[in-house]
Every structure is written in structure tokens, then in C-alpha cells.
Length: 162
Image 1 (cartoon, rainbow, N blue to C red):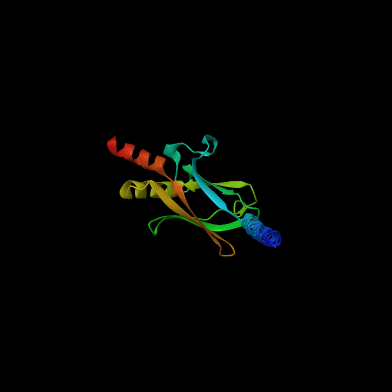
Image 2: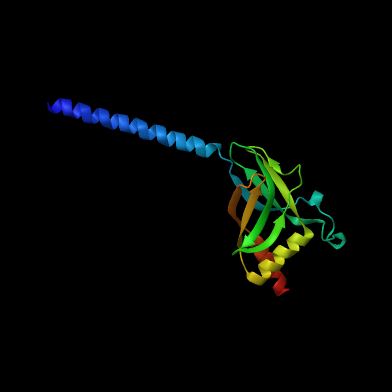
């Protein structure tokens, strides 16, 4: 009798383990299929820059934002905002050829000189080292992530000392 009870209990736990494993596998598969964006602030390659004395407010700045799609679905970005504590710093609208990010690919959005000046001014005035990027897709989905801007903060603090 005791052997029968232990076999039934062992079988029940085996079935329960299979059901839990199947459920976790389905949840992870659904999560992998969703798009996921990562953002990184980089410097613009020198080949794309204009001499600093010749730049206008719409010229390319020395800052660019790399947007990586690490999900398995393509994403079409309508716009993205850089915010700090619910305060909008800049709003960016990628061109139509840069708006689509395929799975496991990235785009590089070069900030205009006006956007770079705005970020530097806000960073100098407010003293933040991180800000939040909120990207909106054409179907209304939002992706939020914090981005490190500490090297802009260091750069603006060096300007204060000189």
C-alpha cells in the first residue's frame, strides 16, 4: 500500500513538473517574440561631422543615439523623446528609412546641433547623469529605458571650470 501511494505521489509531481515546465516555456517564447529596444548614447563618426565653426542648428552634432532591436519582431519607430523627471528635453523623429529596425539590427540617429545644445544646457542646469528615452512606434506601443549621459555631464562641468 505504501509503495502504491509513493508511486501515485511521484507520478502527480511528475505531471505537475511537466505542466509547470510547459507553461514557463510558453511564457518565455512569447516574451522572446516581443520586440525589445535598447538605447545607447554614442559619439558621431568624424566623417559625418561638419567643422564646429561652420555648423548650423540643423547640422549633425557630435552625439548620436544607437537604437538596437534585440527582439524577434521588426519595429517601426514614429518618434522618441528624451526626458528627465517628466520634463521633456528633446523630441526626435527618425527619417522614414531609419524608422524601421529589423530584429537584431540597429540604427544610428544623429542628433542635430540644436538638440545637442539643448541636452547640454539641460544637463548643465539640472545636473543629471541619466535620462529616460521613450520611443513610440507607429502602432502606439511605447518602449522606455534609461540612458547614461554622464559623459555629457562631465563635458558640461569641464566647460564651467574653463
